[in-house]
Image (cartoon, rainbow, N blue to C red):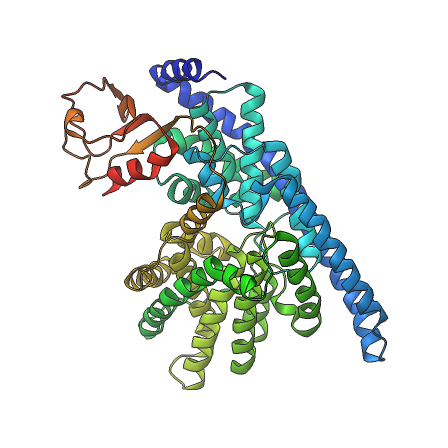
Length: 522
């Protein structure tokens, strides 16, 4: 679509604000339904591939090895090489499908990336299923987010929507993806606003909410998908848990930063062992996965089964430490290989292990009753995810919806807040922002950057708040095309004073998007 034509259509949509938002709402429902069926099929395929691998190991490979026969395991190693090659071919066919998927969607919303929605859709779907079949430590949530975004972009292209409306639909698709992956519509909605767009405008809220709810209904009632974690009823939080909860948050803060460090610096390890191409790294990860499936199968896949077993079987302290170290290293090595797959579910499992280790120590010392162990585990999960993602609202809501128990809101907020602060004290940054920055640094810059329309919310105390438009040092090639506050539109005249609660619509280069968002927030 011609840029000037698209800009004119966008201005026309903004001038009919109420009709535009209503259209977004109904389009969000369409995105949610389509995304729900796609992601429901995706999760079903993941479960089937997991069952196939477990059946092969339990029925053929493990009994054969116990009898001294290594042929079945050697055959699996050959199969792992084949899997690595297939995933490699898929990855080079569509490079934007590599990795988790959330940084790529963020880059799409900022205008850095322009993903081909159909190749991303089938490459992501296929490669993650093959990764789970190979036993790698990857999760379903980030791929589901990118799959939902790809479905939304496909619908936008079919309907021939303008770029701004397409961004709103992609955001709603990411909301549907997370909601469907976790059966958590509220967390999916907030995730799209807090993490993907960092804006709570009504234009984003309506389609994101509609999409998240629609996708959850489809996955629940068509595919029978439920929450991935199974927690028993937890007792009410007492004053005796305040110190353990604060300690859990204080520990998870630095550990979350350490987790991010591993994810962003694992390339150094691969370079040190002279694995610098995509295929050698994938081959290493799949071969390693074969041995992990034998030695420590609990740390394969995302980790939802690991979390449920921790809560149900109460492993020993020494076993918890082994699982923690193994899950951390295997997750870092799996994701560092470039395999399409997420690390949010592994992040939850590592947080659960941290909480289980702490509760085990407190219980053995007689400080807390064993019945409170699950309380600390769930709080540590929220804290660890908060420290890594720097999105406390999404983290807390995910735990609340996954456990189905909202009576522990205060305990989760306390622990997440402590983790947020302690991670900031040690220099923690949002993991998806770091990965996006790495992707932009490593990619080949296009010959010509095209301008995109960005929505910039103005927060209280920000640089933009209280200033006239003419007094602001705007980036070059930046044009303010509209200003809105609630239902009211303001003509962007030079003497207009910007106020908190306003939303600016700016026509700018993608490279200036982060700077403009920062001006509106601080």
